[in-house]
Length: 114
Length: 109
Image 1: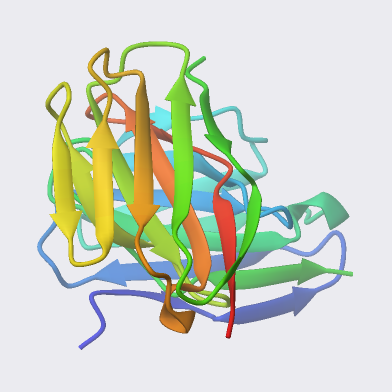
Image 2: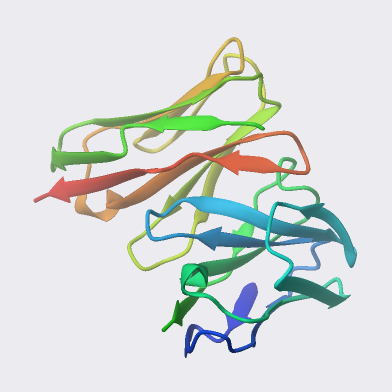
């Protein structure tokens, strides 16, 4: 069983479209995250949720909206996609805050905006 | 905001040579974590260091946390082709960590 699973693995879409990426963890963790990894491999946190509540919201355009229906799921919806949104998006989870314990990452979603 | 610098960005070594990557922060860190990302893969947790001056070993990997808790290093002894990947440090507080830029390691057989 995959601990943190996200779908889809690849997403190619046109500028201006709206898309969603789904993430689920079966580890019973309280905290979930979205990270963006750009072409230079830099990993930057976007959002962090603890028990369905938003606790970290970095400087991310408001076209990006996370939603956590329950603590096992954290989805990412992106409106009006732009070329610069092309990246790999990783979902992750940890038992408590990431600084307390290890984070488990999903396989990533490679988003290409054309 | 918190900045975590990591050097070098790239390193090519012959198989069997040693490898070290360094991580430096402008501020004192509560803890430091290390992750490995294989090409095309996702970051995988290696270790967490919490105490000042802490040293931990995992087989050929040695991790250190500086006395001032502002720097850390990962040393691999006698690299193997399976060590290929990008090594990230991540440091900060307990709710949020900042990832370094990563060191991409290539091992030449």
